[in-house]
Length: 214
Ligand code: FES
Figure: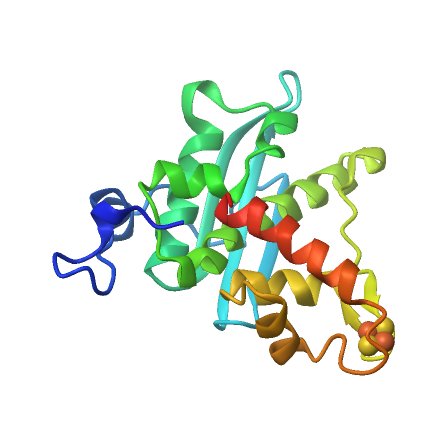
């Protein structure tokens, strides 16, 4: 959750950390070239229905060391999405490039920690870059005939009555709906037979731990 040092002096609101400001005002690894001439090994694109943000990422891979040699991106996103992706692109390319398997283990919390915190309601913006990187890596795996490495993340229906999936629950938690009642209000899960309640409650706890570390 939030770091108290990032709240305003009267305890209200939230001030962005110096690290967030640094990456927002001077984002690293933005794609400046024309995308049609930039020769990427993998391209990923994601959008967040929650905030209307969009993120596109281009990666180059060193096939000998299986490391990420370049990670470029562009976004129509907010300050948090820009700062988070800037930091992520730095993390996966610094020191000669990160091994792909290691890059796939980066958690949103690792990015938030490196930014010295983000407001909770902005956590969902921080996962945009992470999702775009996974999409770009999947594209690279497909193009380089490494289908066995493709990360499958298909939505699974959790509430059969209302057709609510685990991805819907995840999005709700990322938007800051942290209790069963709040998630139910947003997704309508559990409002018919109620049989899905234990599974939904478990997923809420899982995503809270994953994204907020609690
Ligand atoms: S399975 Fe969710 S309300 Fe019936």
